[in-house]
Image: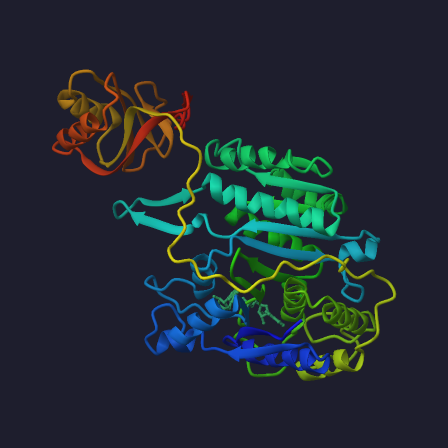
Length: 482
Ligand code: NAI
């Protein structure tokens, strides 16, 4: 295999220290990689690059298809988006994959109880509230839009099953909240079971995310692969990190069809930056996943063996292990791993590595891809209008009814999702953000747009959504209490 070139961004805070440690281990293990060191992170925001990276950095990543990165600081302030999230989204790395395994030498309540843990969390990486599409509708009411798409669900669920098949896992669990978010998480769950049919040898099960958290803590040994939407996946990942000793022992990869990003899950640790005491294990483990991704299986196995052997033998940085023994600093920890190359742990098995890599250099598309699904029959039957008012629901209802065009009907008013008109409880406290549901005999969007215009003269409209019937099914939620 010819040498692969990867883009390396050392990052901020402890980033350069742990990246240097990891690259020193790669070099000692004769990993056949060339590195393009690129500029990304806080100092590039400070230099006026709005996305936190130099244009050459983008070109390097798009040419090489692999970014190996240290943690990066997101400057504080409302105007700046996280460079980490931006990188994942811009390059469509739709699958975030994190492994959480018991590591001999890292004490946890589970390791002490003899309960083995080997959980892989697959988290959708692009959609959900991480779209970051938020608006203040008034000084008091903030709105976040949560997009879940069929194509996004298909990508992540297929990734989870393919990974399970490749690595010999027997079960994939879907975590969700479809009992509350019936359309968004409902779509995720529906796609999960649809795709699971193509993998009859793998058990597919679903668990509501709150119960999942409890079960992961009570019976972590019952879980193998867990697939979730973005925010729930974020939370469940950290919970799983806690099961195996913390974020320092959790590798993370962000995989897309063209570009993939490998990074530590922790942040820049500003409190210990520059002291050469940070633990490079998370970044090293991500690097090992990167080597497997590229197909450097022999090197990945050798480095993983040396890492686990080193930890098993009690070598530790200050953040873990036996506090009564001296801690190694970052450089000493890396040197210990280097001196143990060729050795393997005695108490844990290494991950199976005889799978094949399908890594290929990115083929630059000519245009952005629009992911179009099967055609559907869509019928408009009404509109939801979101409005701001400090009036009581019955007063708002009257204003709307007075001007509503013939053939249209105000069905209900909701507040924070609860019906407050026509039936209501006086105990329901209302914010100044109301929703008005209007249905009509007409199926014409134009008629509804005209109605919105008329209504805009009597109420303060923030936004609207059409009420659709898609392929004969109601495609909008009901107000609470309906
Ligand atoms: P953090 O993970 O940087 O630190 C939390 C605590 O864990 C600190 O006490 C730190 O000293 C310790 N810690 C973290 N990594 C360690 C390591 N390798 N070895 C030893 N101890 C370690 O989280 P925090 O403080 O919330 O975030 C700091 C900055 O990092 C923020 O600007 C944040 O935006 C950024 N960040 C970047 C991420 C990325 O690049 N993917 C992920 C998370 C945060």
